[in-house]
Image 1: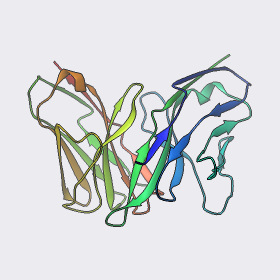
Image 2: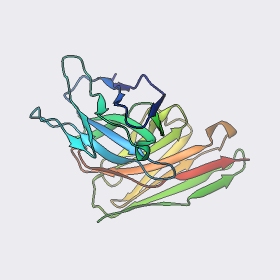
Image 3: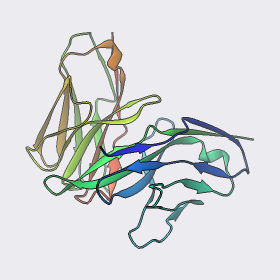
Length: 115
Length: 112
């Protein structure tokens, strides 16, 4: 079936170091891929989504590249900031029966950035 | 801008009790979702609905019912609350393509 895998449950970094959070997926369709971020006591919010034209999405210093050959959509940032500490979810959506999207999330990666 | 409102924010129920969580959106989105959030287990889909009066089961539908009374509202019922299902329940809505998704702030369920 369709699924999203995030291998790291917890990532701890020192401010200024690069960030890379892993995401791989399985899908019988050609899905859109997303990264969502959830800060403490807040709702998840969209951080990035994949494009169909191979553009690399970027937002708030984060970027991710969809590699269909390896079914991956890893999240990267060159230099971590304290405010990046949050829970990050990778997700995919694809058209399901009835012509509507079904959203599937990974297990999440908690990123903690310290000074 | 639009908003998703979940009520109540905190819900305390007794074991075996039937409990209902509500969600309203004003994005005019077709699709609405209910997810359960447990620490270390991500967001697991309980039910979703692609239009009014439609229901689709997710991976975690057992023990839950849902109702899409109108386009803007989607309710979730815990049919018999159990202590092992204490979690945060998140409602979301999206456009039909699933490229625009917004979440509510969640309902935290405690079972005593």
